[in-house]
Amino acid sequence: MQVKDWKEELEILQKELERCQSQQPQQQQHQQQQGAETRTDSRTERKEKRKMEKELRELKLNYADTLAAKESLSSQEPKLLAELEDTKQKLSTTEEALIRLRSKSKILLSKYRSKKTSYAEICVKVDSIRVCLLELRDLCRTKDENYRDILDHLGSQIQIRFKFHQQIISFAF
Image (cartoon, rainbow, N blue to C red; front, top):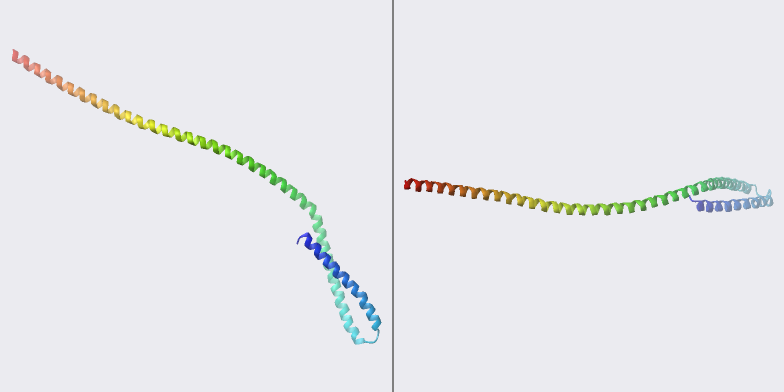
């Protein structure tokens, strides 16, 4: 229950207690006036009186319980208020730390993105250089094969000329 609920219940119990206490003297006066006239009515009146006294005791107990609860709540209130202030301070500290963390995260994320883009650019350049180097290697192989073919052709031409010269020289003699 909250403090307001306890206060309302306390007020209700106080009004009931006052009502019962005000009825008790009226009943006593009424009994004195009746006197000895009706003995049978006095039994019912005694029952009612016991019943009212029982209700009065219950109301007093409820009132005492409510007062004790009110006392315990009022004694805990400063402690709870101090705890609330501490929690508010911790919350503000945590929020400040969160703001710092977010700003730092944004900075790190922007650095990461810039490094990622530069890395991607370097990877593209390296890939293009690799392709160019592979093409250059193929060109060098082709050039070497062409030189070999040329040298083979020239070598065979030289052999043919040499054989031709030998045949000419052997016919001339």
